[in-house]
Image 1: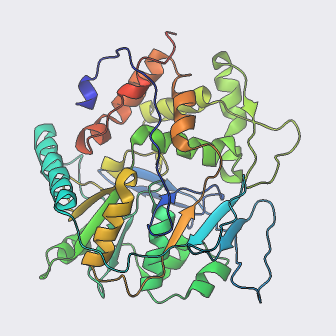
Image 2: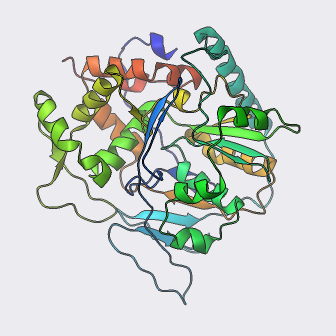
Length: 396
C-alpha cells in the first residue's frame, strides 16, 4: 500500500515503454497546453482544476506529392509502415500512422488482469470510504467525453495518452485526418465542439443505460506523470506557465538556482534562458496544494480528476500496458474499422522513466514524503509502486 511504504534501500531502475507501429500508445507532448482548450477554472466538491488555452501545431507529411514542412518547434507528422522508416529526430514531436492488428482477441491473461484491476480498485475505494458520495467527494464529470453512437465513455486524464485518444474520439465524431492535422484549434477545442461537457447527472444517466457503454480511463504512475508535466510545461518554458517562473525563483532561492531551459521540439531556447528546477517546481506544487489553491489538470491526482470510486469504469487501462489495453477497448467497442490510429510520441530523447530517476532523486525526504501523501490515493487505487524512488532522495 503506497501510504504505508517505508523508505528502504532500493535500486533505481527505469521502466521502458515500447512504441511500435501496431499499437496505440502515447507519450504526452510538449506543445504549449495543446491538451487544453480555453481558460476554464472548474470547482466542484471533488476537485478544482485549471484548464488553460493553447493549440497543437502540426505539420503533415503524407506522400511524395506532398511537401514536408519540418520546422523547429513544430510537430512532425509522418506516414509510416513496416517498410518505411520514421523520422525520429531528437527534439521533434512525432505523430506516426499506426496499424491495428489484422485479427485480435483478448487473451485470458488480459481479461484476468483487467478484472483484477477493477476488483482491486473497488476494494481500496471501500477501504478508504470513497465508494459512496459525500459532501467532499462527488462525481467530477468535467473531463468526460461521451460518444453515444459507439457506446464509449472516456475520462481524459492529461499526461496519460490524452493526445492519442483525443485523436480517436475526434475521428469518431466525424472529423477527417486532414481536418485534425490542419486545424488551428487544439484537439480539446475540436472535441468539445461535438462532445459537450456532461453534468454528473447526465454522466450517470448514460452509465446506467442498457446496454451499458464501454467506459474507461487511462492511468499513469503519478510520479512519472508529474515528471512528464514538469518537462513539458516547466523545463521547456511553456509560455502559459512562464509567468509563474519569476515568483518561483524568488520564493524558493534556498532550493538552489534555476536550471538551463530545455530545447522544445528541436527549437533551441533563448540564450541564457532558465526554468525552475524540479525541486523548486515540486515545492511550489506542494505549497499550492497546502494553501488550498486550484491544482493544475496536468498534475492533479487522477483519482480526484475522474473519481473512479463513484464511476464504475469498464476498463482501467494503464499507460504502462496500453498496447493490449487499447486493443481491448478498440476491438470490444468495434471501432477498429473506423478510426485511423496514430502513435503520438510527444516527447523524444530521454524517456520519462529515465528522467524520473534523475529528478525524483534530487528531492529531499520531506518533499518526497509530501508527494507520496499528495498521490497516496492514486498509488493505492491504481496499484502503483513508488519504492524505486524512495531511498534515493536527499536527507535535507
